[in-house]
Amino acid sequence: GQQLNQSPQSMFIQEGEDVSMNCTSSSIFNTWLWYKQDPGEGPVLLIALYKAGELTSNGRLTAQFGTTRKDSFLNISASIPSDVGIYFCAGQLWDDKIIFGKGTRLHILP
Amino acid sequence: DTAVSQTPKYLVTQMGNDKSIKCEQNLGHDTMYWYKQDSKKFLKIMFSYNNKELIINETVPNRFSPKSPDKAHLNLHINSLELGDSAVYFCASSQQGEAFFGQGTRLTVV
Image 1: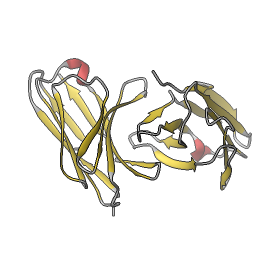
Image 2: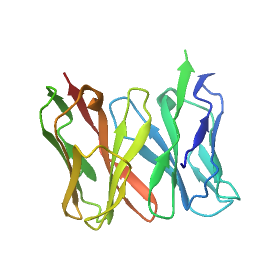
Image 3: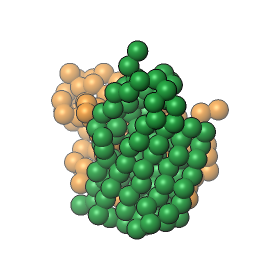
């Protein structure tokens, strides 16, 4: 079945460092989405990507949709304490089904 | 105003009981979903409805029955609850690829 391979599973970084995470799949997606989930909350949409090769920024966040529509990366620059959380990639298939990666847990060391 | 709202936020119940979770979206979206998030935070799609019609059913036990009275509502009824049903259930709605999530319902079966 379709699945998204997200890495790394966890990251421990210092405040101010840049962060990079990515997702790959053998499936081709219509839309690629990146979410952040805080404890006790639902996932919040950060960035949506629609076109192959598209590079989009949202503040300190930058994401790109792979040219084959099978992968994507998310970068966070100059991390701050409120960036802590779980980041999920998600891909929407042509039948509107949206499947999720297993998440990247971002921890910021004091 | 909350875009996707689900009730209740917490639900504790005994094995064998029947319970419902309600979801409403005020975004005017045509597509709504139910997801289950397990203790490892993996988000798994359960159902998807488009304009009140079921379009995705991901091999969920038939104890789970979604109902969509109109395109703004997608409720989830669960019969004969089991311990393994304990999880956080998220409702979401989407249009043009961007999905927005509710805050989740934490179901605990004891």
